[in-house]
Structure formats: structure tokens, C-alpha cells
Length: 223
Image (cartoon, rainbow, N blue to C red):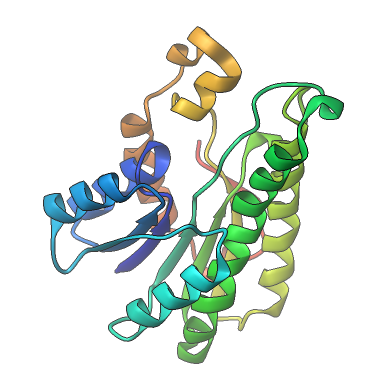
């Protein structure tokens, strides 16, 4: 399988990359951090591919897609890249911070869909996994911007499912509560009580690979 993942420099994206490579799949990934991308490229090499791309920048995603699709159309597109706001009441969230959460968490997946999905539709196969959150199906105080983006991802994923050929799938995926840097922002030291991203990836990779067109439009969760 050719699996494309955004946000591979750390957290869930990095762990999924490692697990999919271990399972023998080809991974194409991106992240903003050029040092992390260089390290991944050196670690894994061809046929895997890693590029420094800001998913919030449509022009960058378009250029990246043209390079990737010239070689291979992905079987799975996993829109994983995401950021969270520093916890605060909504009225204290600065405009620039709110914009960044929206740009990465909503516009990022949309940019990838815009530039990769047409080739998947032409081939009439492929699975689009948009990483959501428990906060895409519930809410908590002081993470309003993040909640808003993940609720948007739920709707975007289900709408896309209604537009795709019956041979394809689009799903929002709640990964569960995982100990990552992002969780530490919200939970502090309590984040250590939850599974590591590496432990999670063993379950998650297998779960994702089992998603079929029959799952399209369903809100899924890694148990």
C-alpha cells in the first residue's frame, strides 16, 4: 500500500509512519519541520518520501501533490497534521492563534483533499482518513478553537463520503486519548497516564488498514 500522511514530524503522524514502514508499506509524508523531514528521509529512504510542506499553504500542497502523483497515487490519504490552541476562554484567544488553528486543522485537510483526491477518484479507489478527536464529538472548556475545527472535520468527512464513488471511503477518525506533546498542553502531567503514541500506533495502523468503502461516512474510533 502507498500511504500518505501529513504531520509526520512528531506525535501520531511520526508513530504511524514508523508502524506502516515496519509493516512493509510505502509512506509519503510531510511536515513543516525541515530538520525532522531530513531525519526521516535519512532513516527510511526510497521508496518512502518525506517533504517539508506547510499543509495550510495551498500552493505548497499543490506543488507537493504534483511531485508525488507523478510517481504514484496513494491508497490511503491520512490527514493527520494538527495544532491546538493554548487553553483559554474563547474571548481571550488572539485572532492570530485562532486563525492558525483553523488554517492547519481545517484548511490543511481541505488542501490535501483538493490536490490528491481527484487522482484517487480517477482511479476509483482509495480511503481518505481525516483525523478527528473526541473533541470533534463533544466539547470541553478552553479548547473551543480546537473543538470547532474537529467538529468541522466530522462534517467535512461525511459530506465528502457522499460525493465519492461507492468504491472509495472518507471517514473521520477519533484516535482516542494519546500521550503526545499536544495532550500535554491540555492535560499537563496527567498526559503521562495515557498510552504512548508508539503503543497506540500498533493498534491504529492495523485498524486504519481495515477501513473499507462500507465504512464510508461513518464516524470511527480507534479502540
